[in-house]
Length: 273
Image (cartoon, rainbow, N blue to C red; front, side, top):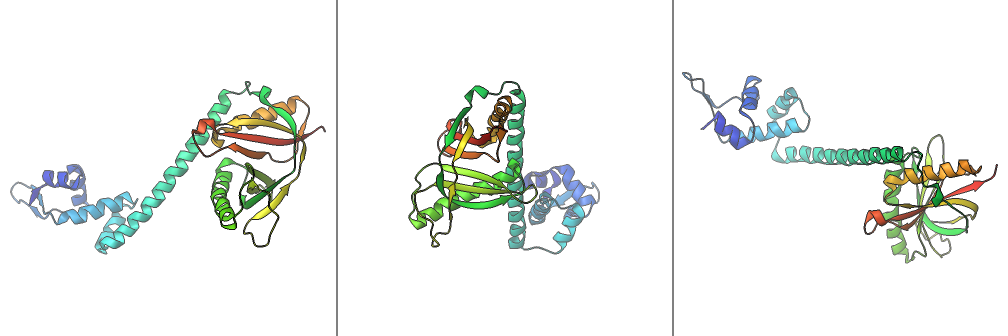
């Protein structure tokens, strides 16, 4: 048998927690010396301690842990529960990291208010372009809704193009259209030079020419794109133009190498009111 201190070391828990588990009836010691009151545990009790700690880490209350332990879950059942919880925690971490990046990006925008790089705006015409694309619908134009929709579309698109033997003939281009309510139709595309075909499991879309567009080269990841968007907005207002619809995002260099070197051209169609 092991003293409570030695058992705590072996189970990698505190003596205080073992006493608490004893008090609530979850893990009483195997033996208590009647004269000294010292608690003693056996090695076999480590199995119950392992399950107790694992279930507690799953987020169960101690009352719930007691119920589950009394059901005597097998190692396989417990492994399945832990695997599911692990996947949930990883997803939560990714979501939290994404929100943190968005907060940091918004802070950078706030820091640069009044100093937007409007001198980097170039007004030009954009020719009609044919793209192969896949589409999805986002709940809104906010980054929390757009990102999870558009990000998986590009790998799927390039996989389908490869199966069809279609080679990209230019940059990737993302476009957006208003849908019902706040929803946005997201189109992830890449320039191609093939004809539409019913055999393709992707769309071929001809993007119309833009007679006049305010454009800016955004450098870095799309997490920081708000600064560039707001620079264009300031320029459009200052020069008496009106924006028509959503911007096109042309991925001049994106997804490879140092993210600081990535380049995306934002193209916003403009007209004089």
